[in-house]
Amino acid sequence: MKTENIIHLRKMEFYAYHGVLPEEKKLGQKFSVDVDIHFPGLENKNDNLAYTIDYSLVYQVVKQCVENERFDLIESLADRIAGRILDEFECTKVRVEVHKPQAPIPGLLADISAETIREK
Image (cartoon, rainbow, N blue to C red; front, side, top):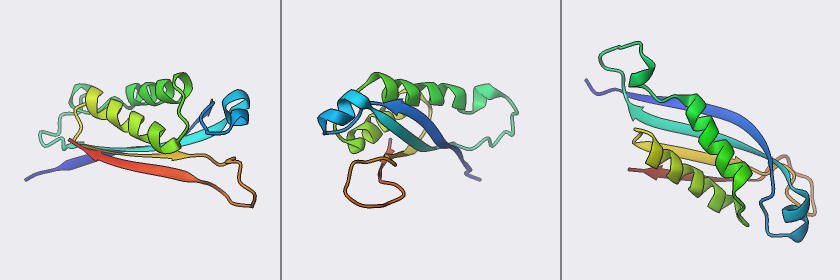
């Protein structure tokens, strides 16, 4: 029997300097990131961290990408995070959604986000 596991990291919040406008690059704003990581199932039911993905390490990768790198587009940031996760962890597929709730647009809205899905 084939099994797939998915780990979800939701609403990871960071303050960073991504955006096209000079004000966004200078003043920064809050970003939120959601990640879904697909990986082979624990078929042997081994209750051991060595057989899964350490989500504390995934969090550190996301944090490093969001806080230490700068992008004009949240699409580029989402793609960078997805690429790093695929490169650094034994996963088969990753979905990354970057939320920019304070995007500078003339109008009221709850959120703007960009999502990328990548597979090995």
